[in-house]
Image 1 (cartoon, one colour):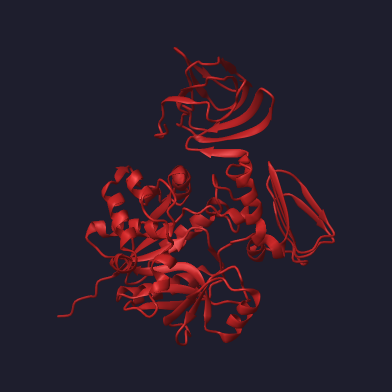
Image 2: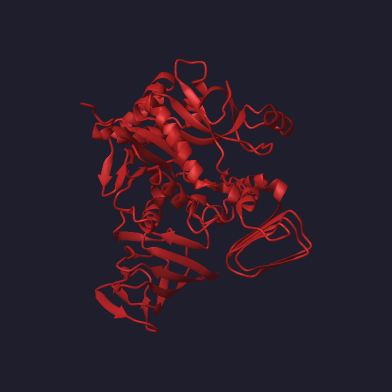
Length: 486
């Protein structure tokens, strides 16, 4: 009597904690690039999750994804998972502070081992794209089969041009479609070195895609960085659970050394006792790490121009225009990137698009609000758009999701007028509670405890006019909040 082999169990892990500052002004800390639609119809995060779901095959079962992300983005993640109909299945491991990818992967490995299994982790950044998802998934399945035997497998992208923006992997032997031994990880090269790497043929771009058993990661981390493992275990032991959210201990997590997967483990494996292999990936991969990369994956006209939004180009070539809120026109420009948002505009030569990080650094030093937040700011209950402001006044457009509500709160320095545009508003103002519909309004005096809620089944939109001596977002005293904000 023969027994059927057990199926290979894959646990997808999607790392969604990055900030994507090189795609400013579209990508910002409050709404980073993984949650943006930059190509196709889905966000990069949704694309990453869907690719892991599509790994199911004969002999392969795929668990609901583990998402590791920023506490501040948790409701954004849930909203995007809901569009994929995965919000009820996925687990969200929430980082209270950023500690890079090694602690994040350690949390995922500890979670994966909770059920008594030792699945193969397919670890994917949330901010990449591929043009050939079928080949991509087959490469990951091949990597998972190799990892099932105990190997650590990293996917190396077959380079098609000399790239200075990526780290490289040097294979020790021929990588003709099979997993090759890794000889060395090398840092981002200069232009001449990148040309040599391309000519030699044994160098591949480091994709940041890792495939390995949960136990293999913990064993390697214990060998190379036992301090990170011990601190991560302490944070895991102190975790709390709230629905689909898993929160490691805040103080314990903050004490973990900040380190990447590459530096903590991967770069130490070649020449060690660990079996680390690289599988070549040729599936139209891009990490969209700069605006030039976005231009490369965006549909173009006969002159090489890529346009997103309302734009008119004349006598221009190989140019990207990304407009979000108004008409953008360009005349007689070549190899340029123009990105328009309601509160900031970027213009750069495509060849210098990596240097956008210099602008971001200056915004940080000058403590400018455009660094982290868009004019339109997303909240768990919906969003607000600051459409106008001046001395002692500010005007916002506010959307509240069906069934959602803002916190019960008051302000020390401002009064507010609310005018309903669409939907039904349930307003608490002191001891009073009233319902307002389209074209009706109310006044919230300075210092009065109040709340705005949407009791209906359609979105509520209002115009809010604030007036007072100070209009900052930190002038809020919360008494009750559905979303656990202090």
